[in-house]
Structure formats: structure tokens, C-alpha cells
Length: 429
Ligand code: GDP
Ligand code: IMO
Ligand code: MG
Image (cartoon, rainbow, N blue to C red; front, side):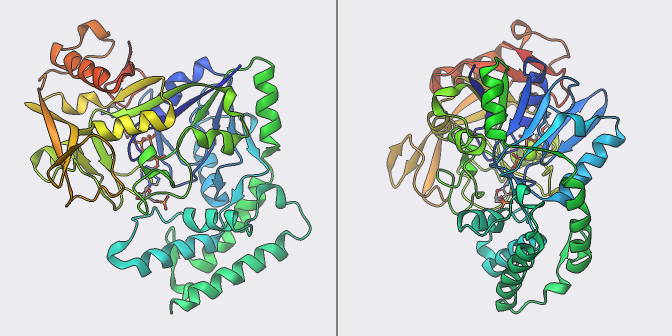
């Protein structure tokens, strides 16, 4: 068997959590391969809403195993809160959750460093979720990280203390009193106490060598879906650097983040919104500053699942979509949030860019707004609500034309259309 992949093609928050949950009954295992609690994946069903940060979105299905892979970074405090919320809702998390021993730990001082680095950048800040992502991956790559499998080592606390004091020394260089920095509403020292308690809890979870586990399951014919976090335009290599996250969010990240050989990658589901959003700083060529932008934000409830920040909104950008399809080898597209534009008179799509008088259809090295003017194709809106249980043939003709236009331009079929946050508000084409 090959492993299928589901990932975001824009700047994150495309609706990955919803689709993973919808597809989960078809899979035996769902595995996260990168990112950490900067992710916020929303799942809605039976009038309940859950936001997952570290746990894969397959956790609501009784028979599916969920794996946190080696490429993921874990904050025990955030993970514990997540587990508690699920357990309170009657979900049997611990039985179905497996954690890679090679996943790195986000230490309290990684979060301090994130806060300090962002503050020091001033206007140039990344707009990080401040979950310690950059500093933790930095330690991983510079070979200073601490992994889940290290918790049981006798020298764990020595290593923790050494990393802590190295980080505190850096914080002090910025003339900041770390004791006064708050994390999740707590002063650093209090947060650190809670973090250590949560670490004990993390140590009670089932820990595995996930690369062996997943490859053996594939050999045994089990179906596995890899769940991406963030989106292609936030990829450390191919996103709008430096306004990106610190991991490889693209399909290649599955090989690294789960230990799967490239020849064993199967379908690649690419998720995109019928428009675009971005939270945090960085270029966004089709960003809207007018009433259309406000309506997208309001009707689409475009506020961050992890931070609550308002998301920047804009029209769909085909050069970016095509770039993401190319980088990921997308085999099927899934279009989310079409309902948000139900009552738009006009819908625009950027097909190319104009840059210094030249027409370009590729994503540029620097997509900053001054130099890039999108060239738009206008489409009539459909002014109609899509009712639950509708099938593809019943969709308004204008929406079908919009879908056909995208498919023809990018050369990949759209196999799923989502028209609401609930599991049931989904059309398989
Ligand atoms: P993720 O990070 O990719 O999993 O996406 P988020 O959960 O951060 O953001 C997607 C938001 O859109 C969530 O609030 C979802 O409940 C919601 N959502 C997903 N699909 C749809 C849809 O088709 N229509 C509407 N209106 N909301 C949707
Ligand atoms: P999901 O999985 C949207 C953005 C942040 C910031 C940049 C770097 O829910 O789609 P970081 O915390 O990684 O240092 O932030 O990346 N970002 C996301 N934006 N969805 C996400 O995840 C994101 N994870 C990080 O807003 O601009
Ligand atoms: Mg999200």
C-alpha cells in the first residue's frame, strides 16, 4: 500500500481538519508529519466543534489509530489540554493515539525565545503564533533538541537545564526580564511548573518508533492518510520567506516527517479555499481592503483557530494554486468554503500577475504587494444558498462554471466541494 497525503495549498486554514475527519472512515491510520501547535484544525459534527492543535483529526473515529510523527514538535502543556478536552467529551484518546519517540519537545524557553525574537523584529515581525515553533525547529536542526524518547533518559533533567540556561542567556541579551513574560496568561515560572506536570502525562502515552510502525502497517495492507499542517505558501523553502513557518509543509515533508520512502506516496489531496486568507505578516497579492474583504472575513468567520486573530482575505490566486499543485504533485483538489461567496454579485480570480509592465504566470521570488499587480478574470456570483444534502448536479450553474474554470486552468480535478463547516456539508463529485 501507499500512503495518501492531505495538505493545504495556500497559507493554512484551508479546512484540512474538516476534510481529514470526512475521509477518516476510509483510513486505518491518520498521521501528522510536521508542524506543531501553531496548527488549529477545526472539526464540526452533531452541533459540536473541536479545534485540534497536535492530535491528528482522525481521533473522532472509533476505529482509527492516530500517529504524531517524528516531524511534529510537541508542547506537552498544549497536548495535555487538548487530550483533556477530548476525554471530557467522551473520546477515548489514549487508546488511539501513538507518539513518535523522535518527535521533538517544545520547551517553555522556546516560547520565551519566540516572543523575544518577534518583539525584536518590530514592524518586520513574522506574525508567529508564538508557540515556540521557530526556536524548537532551530534546536532540532542545530542538534540541540530534546525528543520524546529522551524523557525517560536519566540525564533528561541535565539536558533540560542546559537548554534552558542557554535560552535564558539569549533572552537576557535582549534586555528583557524573562520572569515578566507571560505565556498562555501565566508568568514564565508558573508556566514552567505546569509544563513539567504535563510532561509526566505525555510520558504515559504510547510511544513508538513511528517509522517502523507505519511502514509495517503499509506492508500489512493498512490504509494511511498523512495530515498536513499550515499550507504550501508557509513552507520553509517554497513559501513567502521569511514570512513562513519552520517546517516543510509540502508533500516531501511526509517522507521526512514520517519516514516514508518517496515511492510509497500515493494520492495527494490538495485543499484550497474558494478564495484566499492569510494570518500573520507577509506578501498577499490578491488581498482585499474593500467591502468584499470585510464580507469574506465576516461570513467566512475568518478569525484564527489558534490565536483568534482576524485573517486577511482576498480573491483566489491561480499562480499560487498552480505552484502548490506542482510542488506537491496534487492528484485531487478539494474546494472549501464556497458557501461564503453565496451572495456575491461578482467573484474575481487572479489568473496572472503584472510585474513592472510584464505579464507573469509564476510565483515570484518576492511577492510583495508593491511590485505585483494581479490580473483578474471576473465571474458572476450565484446568489443562492446550497442546501444540505445537495449533490453536484444541483449546484447553481455559476458555481459549476467557477469550478470548471479552476479545473481547466490548473489541470487537476476538483473531487470535493465543501459548503459549510459541518462534516455533512460536503459534496463528493
Ligand atoms: P485548517 O487549519 O486547515 O484545519 O482550517 P481551520 O480549522 O483553521 O479553518 C477553517 C475554518 O473554516 C474552520 O472554522 C472550519 O470549521 C471552517 N470551514 C471548513 N470548511 C468550511 C466550509 O466549507 N464552509 C464554511 N463556511 N466554513 C468551513
Ligand atoms: P493550520 O495547520 C495559518 C502562520 C503564522 C505566521 C507564520 C509563522 O491551522 O493551517 P509560526 O507560529 O509557525 O512561527 O508562524 O505562519 N501560521 C499559520 N497560519 N494556519 C496555520 O496552521 C498556521 N501555522 C502557522 O500566522 O504568519
Ligand atoms: Mg487552522
